[in-house]
Image (cartoon, rainbow, N blue to C red; front, side):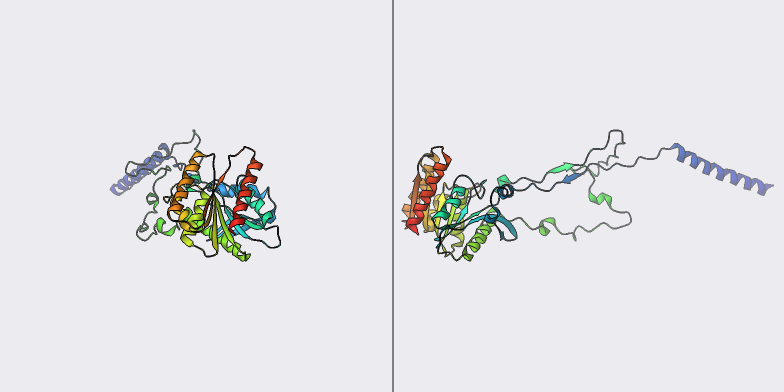
Length: 335
């Protein structure tokens, strides 16, 4: 009797434990699954301004005028027009200014189209955008969860979420597995190749253009820059000093932002045959042109010549024809 009572009591105790466990499991609601917080989605960067302008020109100009050049794994577009004479005088490499295309309607476009009729090949480059014109990648967030879904579990104060709204990756480590050693992980700053500076990109493009020009075995190579393109042309000649480029033309030259060396110290000191074109009706241009002229006189530049262009009339074809005629006259005297 005693053994039977003990067995019966043990069975009742086990039944009570199992029953209470089942009741608790049924009565306690299951914890809602945590809904992942919205994560930032990286969109690809927008195309550069120069690439957009090149795409527009592809729809407007004959395909025969386009050539593709490469500068340090950087493909870019240039416009080529051969001279319309039997014996060309040489190649003129044109550098547009900041925000201008290879066929800019003022200066670059009329010159590249007009000079071939007077014996010159023209090669007009597209330059990379300046840092001020670059657009950063756009970050978008994933769509928010519907309002009727349960709120995701909030993280504790000890592990604050990142700006994107999710916990750091270290919190998602698999249990019983050692976390990765941070010391063995490569530094992103070391693995990612840094983007070349704008000056290096422009110098590489000029070098690629000169290599193409040399392939034509020209009698002369002239570098012509407009606006900030005049600054980059002069800077390239100062740093590289190619022996076969002995003539420089600058039209309304302007110093780019972020560059310390003034044009008055850069252009006249090259000691090359230099044509400096500016408009007389622009007061600021007259002042900077006077500074460059005085600098050339102080060093007794052997072949520095300034050309003051007349006041613009507002008739674009007429004004641009005057520019082409003055540039052609300078080339005829110097080469």
